[in-house]
Length: 282
Image 1 (cartoon, helix red, strand yellow):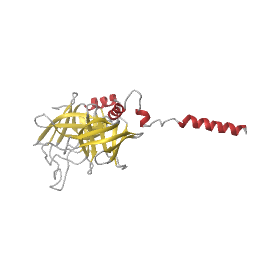
Image 2 (image 1 turned 135 degrees about the horizontal axis):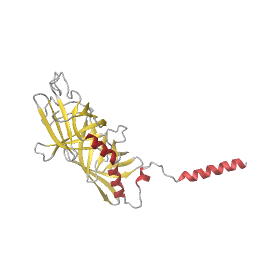
Image 3 (image 1 turned 135 degrees about the vertical axis):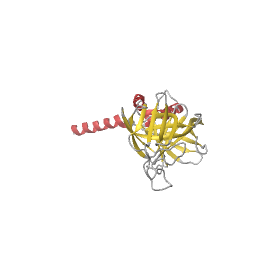
Image 4 (image 1 turned 90 degrees about the vertical axis):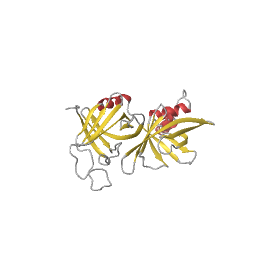
């Protein structure tokens, strides 16, 4: 009887001990702070995290969005043909009648603006479009520490040459590529420590050059290459390459090649390309 009483008492104490304890990985417990108001808390959460976008409770998470403290956001979309597309947006948080709203202005296409009612959750942030009532959620993902991204940037800084034939072969006039391999075809990258880069590609008779700015996403997964127009005044497009493997001496990019001249010989589908360091003029 005494043993039964002690067992019951232990079970009661155990239930009291854990009854009010939040889940250790709950987003609400992670983000809530008595020193921060809701707007500041959500803003910090958006900036400090990597987010996967889940539309209408679908299980497939193919879109990623990364918020920056200067009011810009990078969205990376996996397209139907397996390539990555990039969209730049502007964002802000607004408060109305004690409710919080995320305003996203899409800078490409028709410059559409959406306003979403925001609710923080354990898994991330739930949003409802106040115009269409469409529901979506930002699912929280971790990010690499700044020193890891800095190390990757240091490793990628330098001159790189493709290890193999970088372009496509085709049997159709409608597709990218050529019917036969081009003689002396090449693909080169030059990533500078100041954040600028140059890309050269071509063959024995043609060389195409592009310049712009580069950076690595905060999760260390993607290389973003912002291509400037011929005058160097504005960004014409942004190419996305997935960094599959990198170390000092070699690295691999999973990317689809495009070019400003829209030359069908030098565009490709998504492919894995290896690179090694080289010295110009060697």
